[in-house]
Image (cartoon, rainbow, N blue to C red; front, side):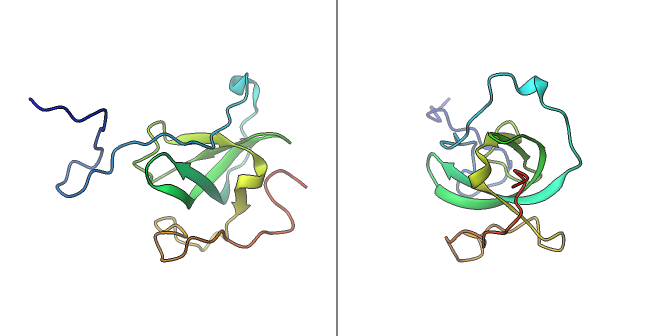
Length: 123
């Protein structure tokens, strides 16, 4: 047996571990069960990973209000629960044709997608 120091890999393949990481900018509402599920909107979400730092990752916003947005990840092994709650300023709408498998940092840039006039917060 060996000590993995709390790292859990999720891909089952060799190579560097892609284990789950804590999302440092997650901000969960006190009563998330009170949020009504809405039609999903493709988004980019800014995530501050505890080991990998800041990245913009593709996701789908499906619950929100003025103060919180819930984003589900389809293909993000570092997000243990497959979702996170963040503040609306950490979310940008994504064009429906944008690839779900690339993030801004994975494609070579660490800059945020351009801000749009209408974001998921409804402003």
